[in-house]
Image (cartoon, rainbow, N blue to C red; front, side, top):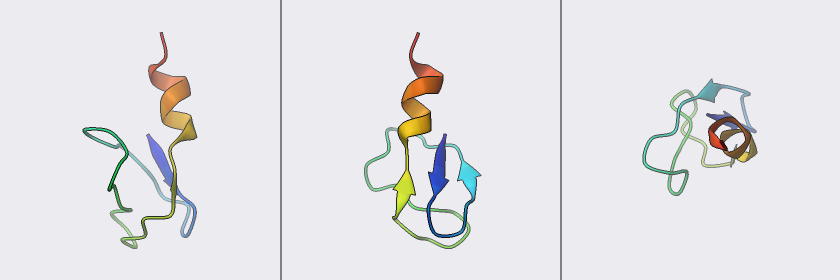
Length: 41
């Protein structure tokens, strides 16, 4: 999961977080720190 820092949308990130953009506002200013906590086993 990633969270857009611009509009706050939370969405799934596929294939890593590099080059991902918010599906809502197309911003690349995203926070993927949540992703690491969720998938760390």
